[in-house]
Amino acid sequence: MRILITNDDGINAPGLSVLERIATSVAGPGGEVWVVAPAFEQSGVGHCISYTHPTMIAELAPRRFAAEGSPADCVLAGLYYVMKDARPDLVLSGVNRGNNAGENVLYSGTIGGAMEAALQGVKSIALSQFFGPANARLDDPYEAAVSHGATLVRNLLDKGIWDEADYRVFYNVNFPALPAAEVKGTRVATQGFRRYTSFSLEPHVSPTGRQFLWIKGGEQGRPTLPGADITANVEGYISVTPLRADLTAHDRLADLAEALG
Image (cartoon, rainbow, N blue to C red):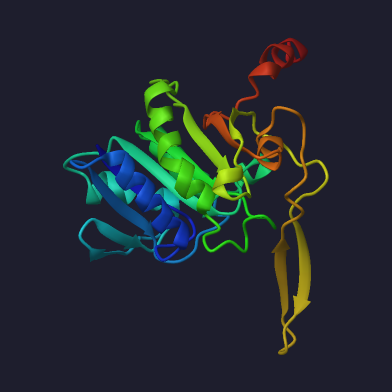
């Protein structure tokens, strides 16, 4: 199996090393793992592509490239430049430092990389590691992802529902903020919503008198509705959420058509 991996935390992020280990295990002895990751951190860029300016790419080692762009740029670079002669069988994005559950999905560059692969017709999975008091001070805070990641990816490849729709299914995986031995299992979950918090903004004035604005996140570790990814993670489970890039509110189409006549 040929696997392309990327992330949004950057080419030197510890989570990318974790993902390399997962991918190497999944690819098997005769497989290949290719890395195309952002040269610098790209957290929060979503599904951004560098449409208005070129992206520099550098080969750092065999099958290892850094690109000055977003995770979606890196996937495009992998598919149309680095691996153009033989496309990957799978794209993995992550392992993100912090969760990409709930509304975080909409901002996440990790999700953006997996989404671009799905739009290009390649199977893809995004993986993220929730952080909290129970794992932040471990020798390896990614311990849950390290221990359970490869098995979960294999299960999704073997048993997951993969389609060839225009907007193909891809998968969002979040590992709970626990030591590996305390993970209770896996739950298929909806994308949740944190009603108790949101992104916000805090203004600051620099020593030179210039005005700057910092985007702030909110509390992450409280459960939301039953069956949601956030709740699964807080209760000690790995969440697996099937996603599509189609943003149509299908449940409103008929009512809107009737209302507009």
